[in-house]
Image (cartoon, rainbow, N blue to C red; front, side, top):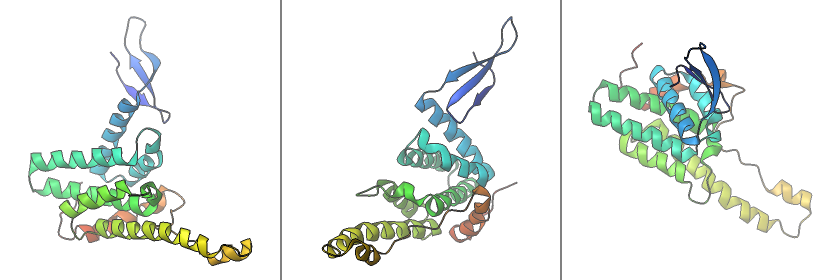
Amino acid sequence: MCGNIRIEPSGEAWCAGGGRKGHQIVPKKLSRTELLGHEDRQLLLALQRRDVISICSFLDDYRGFATTEEVLDLLFTEYGYIVAACGDDDTVQRWKLAISCMLEIWLDYYGDDFCQLPEFPSLMKILQFVRQHMPGSDVELRARRNLQQFRRLHTVEPEAGASAQGKHPEAAQEQVPALTVGTAAPSGPAGIQAVPAAGAEGSARAEAPLGR
């Protein structure tokens, strides 16, 4: 059996095991499922602590072992377990606030993750969840805004291309304005630290803050 396990960004686990020859460090390649399970547990711990740096690191790296929909399914399933176990008490409200903060960061700074043509399934999954559990929240407003922008972007592009046919290429480029989806990403996770507090304030005005 392994003792302490250290997970490298590549998905390789370094396992310290005991034996007559003392502790040895041996590499063990985790399967995709094992890596997803490990990273999901780390994400839940980060949410409990409201650790913005760890949340952003997860959002930077998760594409190497999971899809956007898989992460959302794990997150929303865990929330369902918490609601079933705790009912409608302060614990649920704290988790609701933490998930709101993560979704706001995700939608604002990693919005391209949700541009999945043609039906935008991950974005629709978020909308379904927040309409049930957080109606009227800032998360719902952000998700609806992103959906409108994605639909407008992919409706305007063919029309602009058709209207530019027969024109000089440079002139055609001038006729097609560049659309920006979502908020521009900051230079690093540190630039996002002030976001969750401001975003979460709107989505949980009457909710108790997380305990220290």
